[in-house]
Image 1 (tube, rainbow, N blue to C red):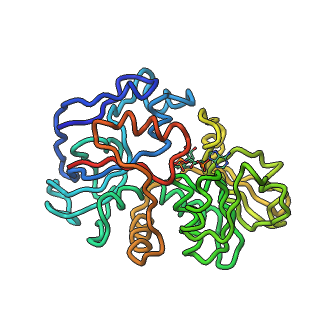
Image 2: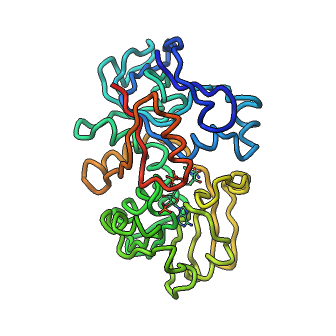
Length: 321
Ligand SMILES: NC(=O)c1ccc[n+]([C@@H]2O[C@H](COP(=O)([O-])OP(=O)(O)OC[C@H]3O[C@@H](n4cnc5c(N)ncnc54)[C@H](OP(=O)(O)O)[C@@H]3O)[C@@H](O)[C@H]2O)c1
């Protein structure tokens, strides 16, 4: 099969299209023919091997799993004998390492059924970014209806899901983005949009119950002044810096308390029930993935480079025939 193989750490030129053996599912395995995958900021970080801790986690000289890609939607090709929930021909979506390939082999727990009403591209855009937004807002942030929520970094993969999920859960949402994305963020439901080149959200006098920070470019000392006295800052990432600090990883899931205010750094965990919940929100048209650009499999290096520039409008999707 054709797959994008990472040969070392560095620029996206270390990602090569190669012919490799198709994986064979074991007794618990689910082999999926990938129809679409999506690119995450994590693919860029692992490609570069930055921060350096990635070498310790993924492999010293190159990643132990050399195939990049984390999200996929496709059709089950074969299953192991212990697999009961899926069979050949089923359409699925899920999260597993190595999805920039014609086939990926995971386990039952990595996939959920893809609703017939959604395209493979829409479904593939969801797992990492959608689950991060959902878990950050709901599980870490404890979002409640009518709360005032600010999403810093609203226009990227995680942010475009966060704005829509926060609205779907009944919050009043403000999104922070660059000037070219103001209309986009308004169109996906934000009640108020702040162009970060014109306004500083930490100094405009507004207060929030929950600040979901995907950009991670402002210190807590500045964010804390826009939090209500019992407000929470949930830190998901550091988009503003192309070489992210390892600090949020080390702190996860540390909760720091400052009086009644809280700061929570976290790493999302794949949960099938969360992915299924997101599929339901999409079927109910409460969430629609924002797809910026599509690239074929052989152009994954360009797709990863594009995401690495730090300004995708929503998700970048890889399409396979
Ligand atoms: N904790 C976790 O489990 C987890 C999971 C997934 C991702 N992440 C991390 O979360 C971060 C975002 O991921 P992503 O997939 O959303 O990335 P992305 O798709 O690359 O989006 C990044 C967004 O950041 C925005 N941005 C850049 N500079 C900004 C600034 N100064 N102020 C406000 N927004 C700014 C950009 O919007 P404009 O173009 O409008 O500037 C861009 O759309 C990354 O650091 C990633 O590693 C963490």
